[in-house]
Image (cartoon, rainbow, N blue to C red; front, side):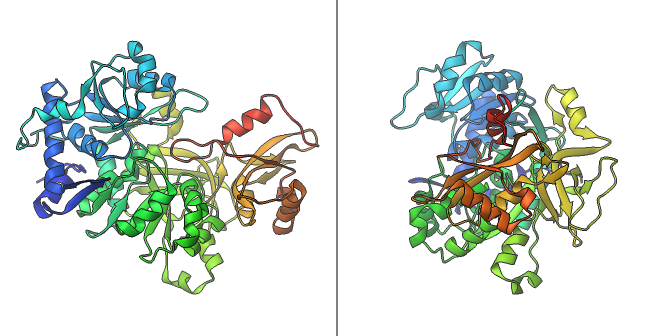
Length: 530
């Protein structure tokens, strides 16, 4: 009576119980679960006709549209693996990923074919499928998506393929910063159990209306592409993050749940429309991708009425391994104190396995909220390894534990709080300074819209903290005022020794701050502060 754990089974369940429920809203298009399933099955049949089958890899470079959702199901129910691509990567990176992944076919949005056109002659692909977009054009050779599977009867049966829960479901590439991108191998079981965590801990219900603000290519939308279907809830697609559009959708579509990096929260609370928008339905928003400042969480809840849920994980862990569980006892504390707790990464989720913070010798740190260690994890959601990269796999998974590289403390109640990435920790005169702690103070300053803190070289102390700040519109504050503000709100040695004001901070397509790019400007040709 054994049945493999696969999120694909939730499509079958949704069709069985919610055939006429609206499954997907994509602009002016809508699809019921019955209609969505038929399109996914047609895609499977068309792919099968072109020779795609069990064990093959298909690359997909699409924004958050119904086409992307169809690919997640239509490709993988063949027993093939989907390779979701970040459409903001350079042509060089895309060439590397497509060839390294052994993808036989590429399904690409017409708007994002430019970099593919640049390297088309170097790709090992056998075929391109292009999703047409109004107002766009391309010179990339390929078949139109609708024509590709439109030749398949709409009443085609879903493929009859035996799925092993340990076989590859998606091959997700991490952003390459100091080396080539790495292909994270995630199987059916890991995706299933991560999506179960998504459903349970984010409280996904049948009546939820979920807005895909988070790129689906990023760790499979953190599992949302599966979890929303499992509950028979409604997917609302969003081609790009546009704060005024998002704020409108809250009201027009009754959005009840969304996910996004802290940078998305920042965009929403600082949009002019936010001042006139008080969302009455108290939608839940999960955030991860970077440690969110408590002040930012407070703004999201106070200004927009969002119920913030802090989760934590990595692509290598499908991605969830911690979430900040909310207890009734927290309801009686002040809003500021609540935001401080919600800024913690929290405790293990129900279905992911074991996570802890350890010293270099592997022993767990004291639960005192002070002793620093590295977060490690093992269990159901950890990747099978990096594709065709046993050396990097061995570096990341040691003695049966995946090492995250994130430095954290554990509080007496077991809640984990990240203090920094190992590479982002500032060591000044032998003292550890958490860049995220300094950023948390900066976000409380009314003139600060965004902030990043990095280490810069210093002849006396080795390195000292520097703040790089994006100011609020029309704000006027000096370097000395920012430094004095920090000194008044934290230990003096932790306060920035220098401040730079910029128009924007470098980020990835998923909103992660790219501190390495900021550090490079100071460490490649050191500008010393004494």
